[in-house]
Length: 194
View (cartoon, helix red, strand yellow):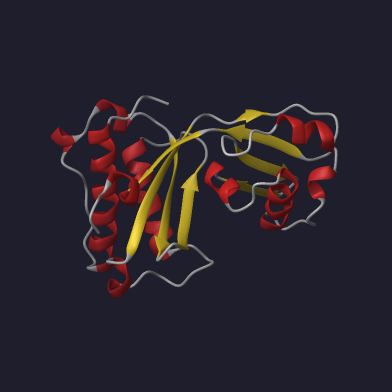
């Protein structure tokens, strides 16, 4: 993950907001090519998270670095606002009250463990994003989720349920765990006006 400047962070947040605004108006938007720094063109996993009055309103992302960061932000902003299956699409009336957060991910790495106790000891609450998978079941929580679920056992139980499995699935030796870290920033943290 390249270092993203404060200027790049402001650019990405404004870009994500304008993509959502233009989508509401039925306009397709592409960024100005000369306004883009090289860091925004590097392939990177990213998530766009929307909060409405401090409540989650949408969160969609890409874990693997398959597209340039700018493209990922554009796609994930639209998906978080209009295609997160947990929520109805964002409306024009809501948009002014929505705060946007962007998370840029490091490459996920497998976590090697022999049992549930060892897994718990290897996790870094507040630092690790976690991908849990078994067969066709897969889910992730960004590191920010540790704020709501600070106990590793609770964090993993909720992640199991998000993946469509029983809450104790993380104790199964057949579970695969990958971890990643994120650089995240939001309109709130950077003082962006909605």
